[in-house]
Image 1 (cartoon, helix red, strand yellow):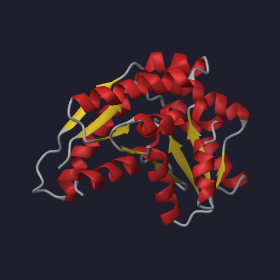
Image 2 (tube, rainbow, N blue to C red):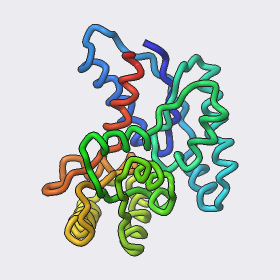
Image 3 (cartoon, rainbow, N blue to C red):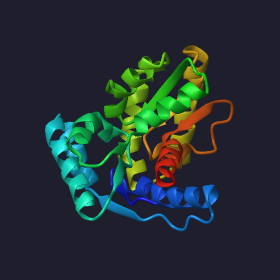
Image 4 (cartoon, rainbow, N blue to C red):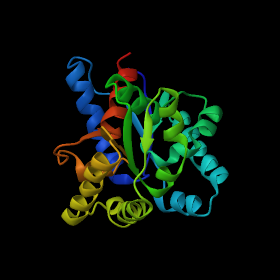
Length: 230
């Protein structure tokens, strides 16, 4: 297997989930393959959020690109960013990277297309829900993407930054976000919800009775395992 480099820490709880899930995925797919060689560069989520708050996308691209370069120096042969929001600058980082990076957005779009969805909802940080990188990718394959109301977006973002990044999984928050999902199903006709924040599955995984979630962590890990076992 090639050596995988992970840009992690954005945030750290989902990076732990990635590490465990990648190892489990390799074991399940090929029990004789052995253990994957994984290098993790855990960046500072607070530093990244400060750049996003200030609209400093160029600096964020520089920060992540430097992280990728460190992974390459450590021996990584391909890589990934274990988060959704930093994909705001994925194209810039990929252009500067000497190794290929597995995109969580492309992997999720491919999964949605395979399920023949026509309209899906999008949950994530406020940065992700306001950005165009998910809608653009989904529009390209003929899938409409619907975001929550402004008030719902604010609630999800606040809980994401204030709770989920700190591994605080609050039942009341879970119930409220599920309420948003069911409202979008009823009012907007969404067939599934993209959990475009890798901490959201930690809160919602297994709880979406009556509505399907596209768990971007699980989808991304599957694409990464594909590359490891190629």
